[in-house]
Length: 246
Image (cartoon, rainbow, N blue to C red):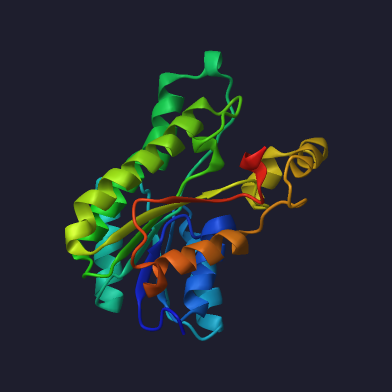
């Protein structure tokens, strides 16, 4: 398998894109620490991996808190003895008009979506050997604006810039740092945000004619986590069925 005997941490692995990534990495032979704010959901993902014959660990973690992030990395290292891959996937997107947005609401989105990338990546990079891979889940919201999501757009734009700077600093350690920017992906979170009319309008805007699936994002992550991507660093790869081409 492409990632046989590699050890990975996936944040936000309890559902949606994160769960798809965790399952895909495990399918390629990776030992996966599935982390989520909802520990019960993380355990469900880990159980699915184990049922399929893979090795997995579930850890509850609030990625916006350094102490919990350090605990996550410590537990992953204790379980699997090493850490080769980090996938920063955890994120939130609460819709709120810009003029009604509170400071607390802004801070929460930036803490969960952007500060967490700093915390998790720093802790992981200190433990990673040469050949390590850090992959963060950005969004097409880092390239185009979305009403009601100014905090989310700002956080995702920040990820792209952070990825470029981290890639430079970690290049001497031969750690690759990249991002994947999903378009509209069919997940529990997206289903809650979209009504039927909005979903149809979204699909109409996508040249590929369908919503993306968690597997579409997972495929890109698996590639970036593999040795085949050794010469790719500091990049944000858009996976959106062509939405941002219009």
